Image 1 (tube, protein in one colour):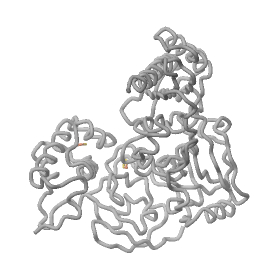
Image 2 (cartoon, protein in one colour):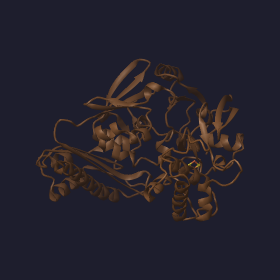
Image 3 (cartoon, chains in turn brown, blue):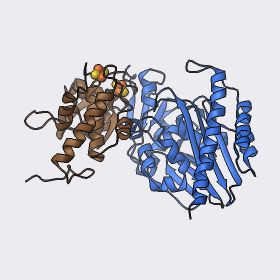
Image 4 (tube, protein in one colour):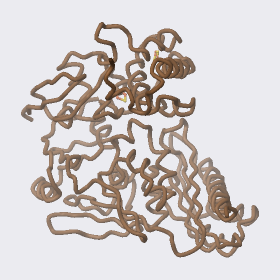
Length: 174
Length: 296
Ligand code: FES
Ligand code: FES
């Protein structure tokens, strides 16, 4: 089928591309845009490695076609780091708590937990487990990932006690 | 794991969906959340020639209704239904079951109508729709059609929807004919969020003395479609749901079904699990209702 033009915003950058309808959003991010931070695991919606944030909500990018993202907004792991390239508080907590070994699941885990912390700055352990329950990790045994999310949540609350749900989003820092 | 090539239509309204279905022939397929269809396309179990995307159709999104029914438009996200106070108030059984549907990432895309139209035998939303005797509405170029849920599921992922029809809404009746309503939902799966091996859904209405006035019981994972278990529901009526009555009623459920073995579980495991899940779901529903009676 002939390629179609789409325009998508990824990590606040606008892209215009020609895509065949069968190209998944996952393959579009990796192969067309070169954003290989998002990982391809099972490619049929089982492992969560491909998790990205679509219009503000975490989803599996292998279960969407790029053409469906036309006119929409996507956030990937490349968008987490600060402007200086430094790790985000969540990424830093993953590093500190040893929440990764091989790193294959990590971008998906980060995006799922990033979406959680944005909606809920003080999640319980069960809420964290629910948020990452669709993401498989074959290395860590999950405990350190849960700990890392708790650590990040605590540090982010301490750094910004005012932040409520979605609180950081529209904040203007002096 | 790449889908075969297809042509793509993003429909802007329902009329366009119906027209595209009419023109598209038997190989065209509607895509809503894609959480069932896209894996099937990746595995080449489905090879539609045209995909009609209904995600931009405003008429197919939203939650409404009145005192007698909760109406959920077919393309409403499962996550939206899960968060909706209206769903919790009018169809508490659905609200409970939605937490068992996949994972947050899949509920953010997956839709209420999509789950029913795909009719996976272990899916939670079709099970609840059957338990509550939901009404469905489908539309085609020929007009709208009401479909009762009892004749809707034909077999493994097969329904009475015609190839040119689009499911447009699901109507869950509200139990407001008196009595205190309690709900129970139980399932066994290998990991949380995985497909259920067996799932049981129960809704009860008790009078102020705790006597059961109305009961609906259904099971998933024990047949190619979800199944209502009338014998169990009838055995509960007029009882005060003591442990013995509930245990007997659940045993009846195990007799009513004829599950088959598959890679996940033997037939016998399913039968025994069905009994236990039904029993626990009834007790959960009873205790929830009794908790409400006790409240001043
Ligand atoms: S690659 Fe998308 S869920 Fe596994
Ligand atoms: S760190 Fe290896 S899969 Fe999670």
